[in-house]
Amino acid sequence: MQQEQTNPSPRRKFIGHLATGAAALGLAGLTSPLGVHAGTVSTFSEPNSTFSDADDWFNKVKGKHRIVFDVTAPGKGHELILPFAWPKVFLLTNAATGTPEKDNGVVVILRHNAIPFAMEDSLWTKYKFGEFFKIQDPANGKDALRNMFWKPNPVFSVPGIGPVPIGINELQESGVMFCVCDMAMTVNSAVIAAQMNLKAEDVKKDFLAGLLPGIQVVPSGVWAVGRAQEHQCAYCAIV
Image (cartoon, rainbow, N blue to C red; front, side, top):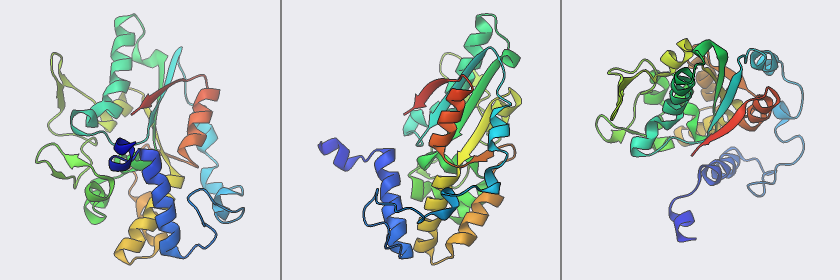
């Protein structure tokens, strides 16, 4: 019990952000972390053209062996690389058993507190993602001001294996598909806007404009988990 209090889980932190964002924006309808009344978040209770291509995107999942990696939070220390190392491990070990990359379908869902990995360096600096999401740069041990997994330099090296191409751009070249949770972007952009005395809609627009190439926006991470399962992806949680 004590561990839960001192090290809140990604889900608890996200729900906490929901409550904080509601208070900051004066949303009286959110009387408790789970007390979302019908119509409070209208963009998620009605059809939204923003997500019209999300289902089409999932139709691109191909291959005999399919898997979805559910990334809810950045890891700590050496675990920081896990959301990007495991997809590569999946591809490498399938290759070792006779299945080339093109015959695998790999989806990575960035949701909850993992959403900054879907965004470019400029947003990490502008909104201090390292401080806000508790992500440290292993190069200096300080709050990260860059997305370490977009075009990484130098490339990551794994003990006993050597340099491994696990940058998001490198994984995309191997056919790995990345998507990001719009619900988490909406909540966290509102919280950050309140802290910086900015307009929530402006920060959200910044988030969307600063997404990395090839990253698909989905209504929510849990929506994407469901769609991936419908497309016969095995489930792997990155915790």
